[in-house]
Image 1 (tube, one colour):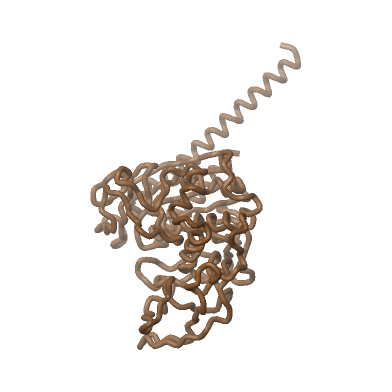
Image 2 (cartoon, rainbow, N blue to C red; image 1 turned 60 degrees about the horizontal axis):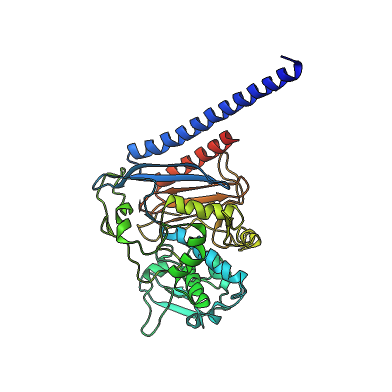
Length: 415
């Protein structure tokens, strides 16, 4: 063997050895994620979980553990359909941003321009928790479209505001999106029905019902074939049961809001929640964001629009960790209190935590303990789907954080 051949042979051996080592590290990282998720199920911390990791090119990891229904023991599979609730919100925000791109609506337009029912908004000036008496005043300004995209409109939810929970309007008063404002538009951030308003804006501006718009302009281009508000009966056996924690372990009574093994019917879809989806489908949505609005040749958003959505749009205002006002949710302890920001459709992480997502990562979740994050800096995204109350359950968040740490170990092994 001549010198050149010896060098080439040695180089090829080195490449094979490196590839073998990388493959072994990758397998170990995947096995560690499997062990973590399996352990959470076997310890009855959660009833079942489907998890997926993706990068810009495709899926890096996907697996399912546990049961889809505690009452029957039906096994959970990776193609299971989850009610993703508020994970609908980024999709609704994407739909509106498509219309912004087309010049059909402006972010700084008063929302009342398209929705007359929002004219003359009122703010709660005082509220007596003992008697329910209240005093209203006119809002300092009309809320703009961007205020609804960023949860700075002044609206709330009954589970994020004790005032909204207890508020009973006087005779003749109507509030199309749940109640009067807690504060003037832009004054602060409060998780709310704002994206329901965004959904109505999409319908009014596009002339289509929300489900039809999503289907035509987002789901078909992205090949999200299992994402919809209304789930046909034929897919009913893939729906995961909605469940409720009862004590320390997830082996207590099951709360079924939807009978098992039938379809899901939502007569009036809203922008803030209601979609059913799979880990695979939501992974495609996340990959579209990672790829600056395009996936497999289908462009859903312009690259500059995605960059705009990823930016802080609440300025010096920050996202607080909210106290829950209803038992269906625990406190919002997954938020970095007073440091996180909000873009158009996403929570924006500001801090860098060791072994976890990068600053600038986008995320949110759904009330049944479904979560996702997108890390543009590292080019990776993850979703972890469970299906039980209360939201932000401590055990669910532990599983989520362990999965995220495992994700970055896997990404490091891939490289």
